[in-house]
Image (cartoon, rainbow, N blue to C red; front, side, top):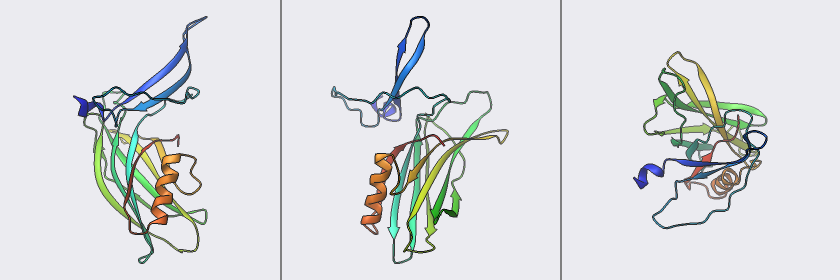
Length: 193
């Protein structure tokens, strides 16, 4: 039972009821670290999203390989995937891009998989060849859903770079670049595309 909850997130919404019911703020608590003991959490409330917000998370690993001049990105898994809003089946895939000097240098994508229990497991590795070790680079990973009629929708993205505004993404990138050949793995909540 507890293992099932580890693949979920709790969405908390602060609402007013006068003059009508309205969400004024929300936050998300990932249950990945949930244990049998009671714990306290301080969460930042954010203004509610105008679009239908996706609370999915991506599990990514990175490894900088300077000798061969490449970066390895492994799309491990996704969790908290949204259920299908139609009777059509949907599959999920990750599109990854290497950016350098303001250009997309290389693109890769995982195979599309159907979710099971709100999660997918790819375990797919991509090797991105750097055009130069002298210029900074970044990786982006976007999560897409695709319906059985081939309509795809971007659910969100993770930007791994020194310019990332998301602390977990920035920390993973710093650790990856500071420690060549070390595999750095982290879960990331998706940002709007």
